[in-house]
Image 1 (cartoon, rainbow, N blue to C red):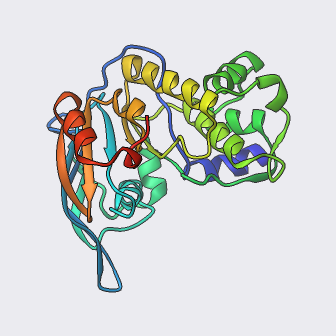
Image 2 (image 1 turned 135 degrees about the horizontal axis):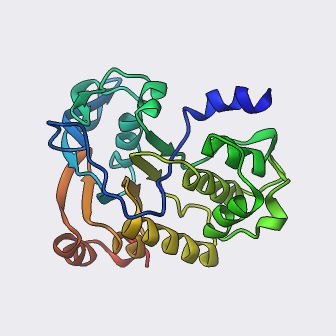
Length: 266
């Protein structure tokens, strides 16, 4: 019963593609998997985002970066439907999803990993991973997903996702649950936040594997140079606008030279 109830909740949660080199093909006639047209967001007269125009191809790994407070997380939430734009439109596989709910977007296999994941009292890690996957997972599969994010599976499978876990542990468990899903578009909001250096190295390996083999598109918000090195494209958001968008090889060198060393981490 708990599994069925929580399955409904998970439609609002996140992400994952499979470790298989299968090219995703969008709906016939759709030029891009995701297209944002003049998207704006305003709160009490303050412009958070201004006329964002952005396209994401299928199988594309995009890193969104830029100064804090520039609107990166807001943009991610708008794509997921957590926030509604005050202007512009969003197309996914050629379909206008601007006014669709989070649940409707989740049904179209868009997923989002929160920067600060929720906790579930009475929900074990094993059950959470099975819920994310959509059916019961055996222990080996659960262990594999946890190992990918740097957790010793035997220590966590039967623990509850509650206040007994640290923020970093909950974050890694959420990312593991993302890996258990099969979505077309995955959105990660600073997945490295609250993660120790060893676990971060494991995450970089996991994202590299996703970049090389996954059939899904990935949008990842990060300040980490090692993550930006994995990108197909880098988008710089500053003052609520797209300042730069281009191939990693073109954007990253100038980005590293432009900002102070403390702005971006290696």
